Image (cartoon, rainbow, N blue to C red; front, side, top):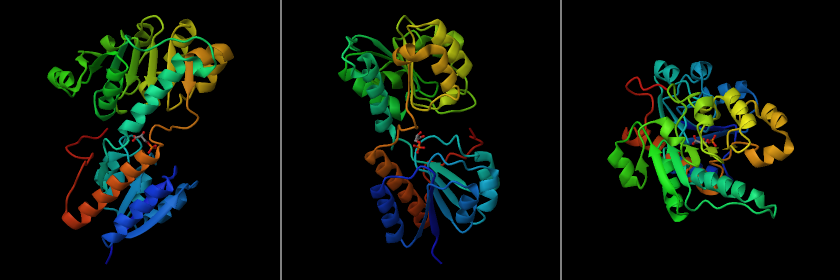
Amino acid sequence: TAHTVLLATTKPFAKDAVAAIKTICEEHGLVFDKLEGYKDRAELYAAVASAEACIVRSDVCDEEFFSHAKKLKVLVRAGAGVDAIDLAAATRHGVCVQNTPGQNSNAVAELAFGMLLAHKRNYFDGNSGTEIRGSSLGLYGCGNVSRFMILAAQGFGMDIYAYDPFLTPDQITDLGAEPLYDVPSIFKCDVVSLHVPSTRETKHSIDEKLLRSMPKGGVLINTARKNIVQEADLLKALVDRPDLSYLADDKPDNTEEIKESLGEVRVKKQFLVTPKKMGAQTAEANSNSGIAAAKQVVEFFRDNLVKHQVNVNGKHF
Ligand code: 3PG
């Protein structure tokens, strides 16, 4: 009998991406089912009960999810970050979890630069701003997003530095950045951009000390996860240092408190948050990651091929 693939997204993909996922599944004899914009966890549990494969975005997949997913063999996160998935629970339930690394990366890098440029030009209010040519860019994490950050930063004439504990200095040099050897060194740059996953090591790793160590006029861009930064520390640093700015795509839980503490004028100067996490919200990223996910499901069933599995070798984030 044909395997059923469920596309379950609280934040639906663009229509074209959904159509492409459906076509790929059906062309390969898989049954396509979808649950978009669900509000209730019970809807998700009911839908996943008959699925052998499931494609998700940032949807929370916890022990309860897996306990309802009795037939599930493969769960593909169409995107990079798997922090919403309980990987240990998936392993216990015998589910292979995969992601689609690199598919959203250009979209995220373009958002990071877009936020930076808009910020530097006062959100186009007509007032005189500053340029980024000649300033330094520090990248924390030098993976798929940072590769695009480097290409863009080269075009803008920035001095580019990067730290990544999983790469050798030579690999970082080859990518076009000057290697740094620890996190504090990154924070000496004029612009710091975070491109690390949310893991045990990175969670809450950006603290008051690092934030305060930034040079005058420092800008921290966070298009990664909000929990990389210690939010209470962020509030203190922004209040005490009117020259610092935080531009983020995954808004901190204490956003309202930060806004109240800074007041309207300083919010505009120092604090930009998107209303909804939108780094991967482009037509291209939706199609890239959705199609990659569908192809991985096809390969899993048709070819017994496992790509980008994230719950192997005890590598549980
Ligand atoms: C990712 O991890 O790939 C991005 O954060 C995108 O997440 P989303 O699919 O929830 O937009």
